[in-house]
Length: 290
Image 1 (tube, rainbow, N blue to C red):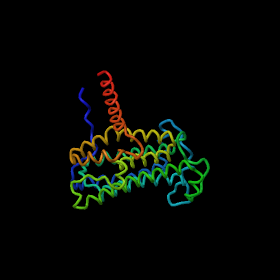
Image 2 (tube, one colour):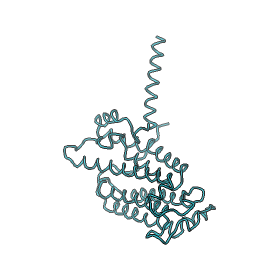
Image 3 (cartoon, one colour):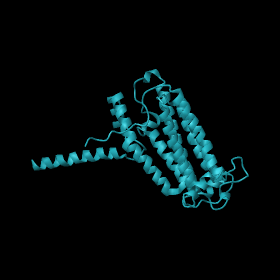
Image 4 (tube, rainbow, N blue to C red):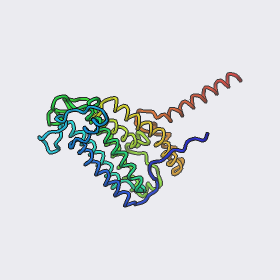
């Protein structure tokens, strides 16, 4: 059976694509309104109950004491969705040069909205919600001090989204220099992992899920994104970069130890190492037999 052809979710061709970009920006901006209203209008609670689950009480979500209309925990949850939209809109407007067909813009925006919505639902489902049982201080430092797991999740989210954003801005600034035309980029944060922007996305998605659904949901979402990147996203992009840059990219792969997250081996890297070990063992056995 021939190997399965891996699918690249984005185009690698450069094109202004004003309509596709406008659609993407509009949908990601609309997501902020959608996620906020899932909480403030009770849509998330109603969805959980229609699915046969039990939601937390309305008083744990809403308050009249601040401008968001949300308790501190849910203000944080809302901020996480806002941060994801701001980051992706900024990337589309400032960084991305890739062709963005309308269909691709809708697919990618919808994908992120679906995951954000799942996290909102997890945050109000009584089984998974990390909402404090007692009303917390409206001051975030005090709130985080009283809820260390939530603080850790928010910190993980911040590290991940900054890693993704900073690495992509570093690469863009480098490529603006005419002297770097036609060269693959492996400096800055990309010197720690060849696809560290993907790693950053995986990390902030994990932190987001930790805030809204606790450790089990964080582990699940980490596994989903980690698996997709190491079995599809990274191999597809590696093939593209190897074809485009040839030996220059092979040199980067040999020099930069990690692919997704510094300190974490990707399965395909482990496979390469196991294959090397197998060759050594088989070679030694051949030598013994000879």
